[in-house]
Length: 429
Image 1 (cartoon, rainbow, N blue to C red):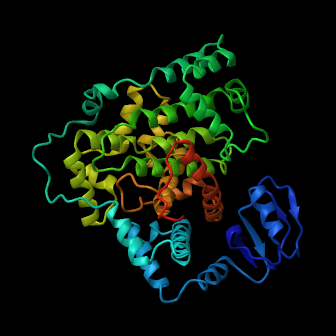
Image 2: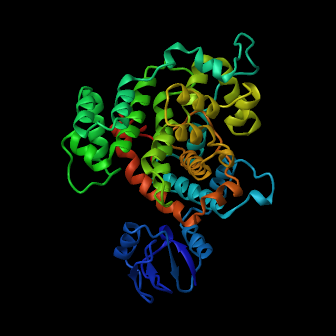
Image 3: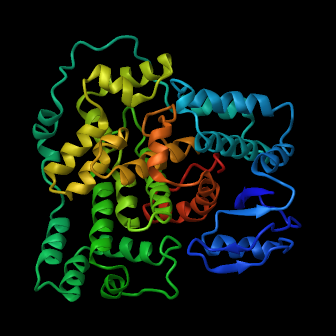
């Protein structure tokens, strides 16, 4: 008997003990032979694992891997291993990291089985997304401190006024939903995007919402301001000229991290799912500032990351003496965004240094999952490291990861369509 992740459950498996939801409410009795409807019930009620007679997690994983072409499996595993940072020692190895690797292997095998891309072609195209020719640090770009970088960027020094107007109304004791709706309604594009999000699977509301004032009453003022913040940032950066990053792929990765962060936050009581979505959406915007100010040096950093096989944020620290997370924190400070959001994003590669370590750790895990699923790209080829101490801060079971990925698949396409970020047709997820 043993706990098995819900994603590995099959029809006919027998429950070894009564199954309850995360709040302890009885769902399915011991001895029940699992059917498809039971698995749907588990997912509906947030159950991530079940105790199964005569089987444990490792056994279930081995059975799943038996479906993969034995000639391809070692090649897929080698490719997946190459995407992860090597742990400094055995203390950095943990069950969650191994589960993420297994899920990557299964995802890649599924892509090949469905004929989306042959393995060699998939690996080649994956690498091309991050390849830039740069053999040495360009001498013509003078690197300046991060605060000067943000302060000296006149175009970046102010944020769209509508966000601040909304925040002002929310903070005003005399503010009202009608006043908020009026301000949002003055921006037709913003109104349309908000209604699309609220009516999407992302929120899963029981009936269609036809007005902004109704949307506000359902999702709340804080959630509204968070969504406006995210929408405004995407609109704000949309005209960055093409260079070392393709903006569609950049925002695909950012949206993916946002969706994963929101799904993970659902498993931790007391966290704002919408705030974590926005944190995911904005976690790499510091890179856009760096790319724009120092395009040649940034290209060198990306190539160095590939050559030395280390995550890009670590190379950024060597080349610039700071990384994109620090720049993002200063930019959000300049825009007067909430301090908690500034902190979480600034520390998403060092969650244990954050005043809100759980939120920062969720953001890092969301970044890891988005990168591991190869969903878009912000310039980083290798998957950011997730050490054991950071994982332990979350107090989550690795069994939450597969359900999160399954839910992600159902939600992310709709969110991308809302932001007009349709993924490339030749890449199947």
